[in-house]
Length: 166
Ligand code: MG
Figure (tube, rainbow, N blue to C red):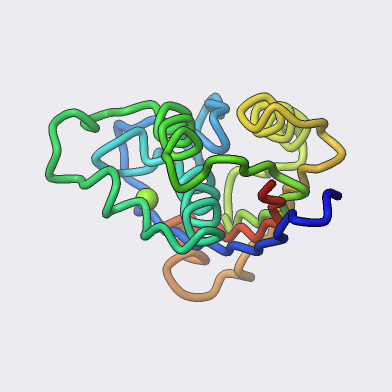
């Protein structure tokens, strides 16, 4: 690490409702069959994991949040691919010299079982950040049947990252 490099942490959280007639996209990966046939409701593709990751990226440089850069009142982001939102975030002037050191995420969902999809999600995130998959951790939890996540009404995600700015 160069002497003048700064290390920054960022964290993000998101939650989207599960509804019929929508796709389930997590970390840029479409999950066939969704969550027992349900998908995430939102203005964009409602990729709850990427939204948490984007907030962590923005938070690491105190550059606002996803809603301030990509408002859901803006038709430009209607049904947007959230991978494009992350690419736009990473291209912001505030992110100049920014490089991901590592990212650690948790998806909280009662369904589907995410273990078979973790490798693809890690690869998708690594491609977006242009880093190795060893820098990307994606974990899955259930909510043990409790609250709206447990009742399969929503999926939540959290993300925390470390970045180096040179
Ligand atoms: Mg969101």
